[in-house]
Length: 573
Image 1 (tube, helix red, strand yellow):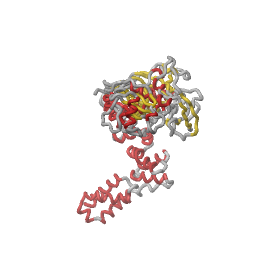
Image 2: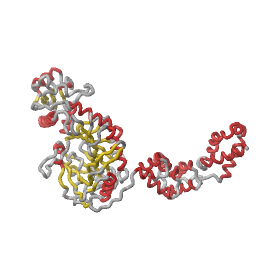
Image 3: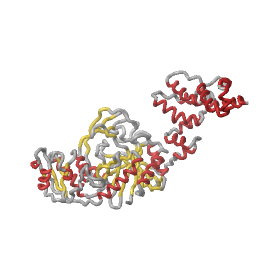
Image 4: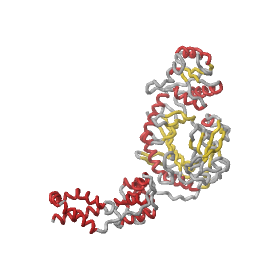
């Protein structure tokens, strides 16, 4: 199968909220407020399909320390944040994209509760550009700056405001990726490029969406990739899903019919016929490669508040006998090639649910839709594919003039790695952890590069893991200076850090001089005279352990090795 795919990468920026002065930090949620949201028509008089698919309902919002009246939609937005605009232009420069002369923010209708206003503010900042990845390159279509949405709370209709308004870059590539491996490589390259700028790190701070199609299918958007390792598997599963569903023809469902009286034990029940769909709905026992359209229909009806549906391919089951299933099929005018679906709800809700399922059946095999990526590699229906009808101009934010803005591009990760006086692996770890600026500062203060790298990558994290506080930068500089001057062995840094964190005095930093070390080695050689004469210079290894047992943390291991070899040669004559 031929794959056509394009990436959409959403990356949070590390520079405060986009339209207010609140910090972009997670906080403890406090009791908040509620909003009722519903879809509205755009300035062209059209209602977006994705917005129309959401029910009008009440949403609860929980505030925290990092929120103000802007997030609550009680105050007009301020901004946009100039730092966020600068980072957006830096990323555009790294991609070779062309910034617009003037930026206009738009409102994107979103009524799923993830925004208190019922819309998301977004602006096109740059177009064009190119991303190189391992094995190829892909064109950049556009780069947008927008506000992030709320985090979900514990309840289905509850949201937390701490993430709302965090600056978010949305970068879209052209549909030029033609293998699952290319998709993964491009996503990885984009993530590495973004790390050169002031972006947030951690779970949920970067999200990858993917637009996928095959010749027999249509464009489907897969949302919510978090693990790049599963990306090829998810893409392959989507290609297989579209290939299987492409053979399914659309049908015109029968009318919604009440069948409560046909069931012995049942609350109100409604059903409808699906012509020609017998055996296409499937069940948990269906073999691999089955369309499982019953599961697809169930995902659609859940969006009106129904727990699910029953369908003919899985009957008799769930309290419906074979005899009752046959009577229902007759009542709904089903032929042998037809299927039927059932919803157990009161009339209004049941008809709304059946209408959703029937609308999906009318679309046939592969509809344009947005799907949620699952941890096991599959995907489930999320909402219809949105269109241009959900966009209209933002009237609370003035246009932003970009023409003439000169932005200094940050060095790339590769450039930052190259200037570190360390091996490639250790340098890469420092840069990816965003510790290279701190590394340069400590080295400039006199710290040995390797000792500084070990301190930042291993010793300080171990200290935090043990629940001990890290010393101040001034104390760290003093400690590293002692290592550089030979007053503290590099093996003694860890013990010194732990002692300082516990509030203890700094341990004895060094042996009283080379004389104490030499005296100990001479005494050791005399005590093990027979062993030394038998092994000769090969005795260095065993003797090294004994000397380090006495001087570990006080004398550098390299110095111990050097003095031991000198004294051993003298002893052997």
